[in-house]
Image (tube, rainbow, N blue to C red; front, side):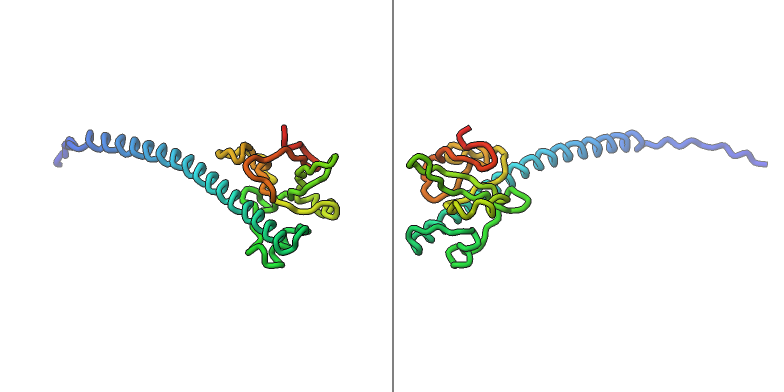
Length: 181
């Protein structure tokens, strides 16, 4: 009987494979970190994009209300839908930050001979619409923006209303805080 002796072969590439494995792991870690950093950048870009869209859409309502005033002097729309139905607004723009896409309504109130802006939450508009006229819109979302718009930091303070120029004045929120806090 022959006895077979196992001859141990020496694998010359063994050390190189271990090094390659470590390099691949290192590359995966580097790519993951870069991906996470880019995700933060995308989140920032999307929020800035939505802020620009909020300003654009809000200003579309201001322009529509101004045009409504030109077409019907002394009158204001009773609803946002009326602006669309009378072909003054191209479409009903959704609020970009809220899930429902609904805007709070900006109106005017006379107090002591002075007019003051009043914000009425969209869910209370049906209750109050008889006594107020629509002069603008505002976001219902209370989040701090990257941008400061007309000296206001929070989206629910960015009033888009007929008659507001450079600085958003003090305002009252029905069922909530006032805009001068």
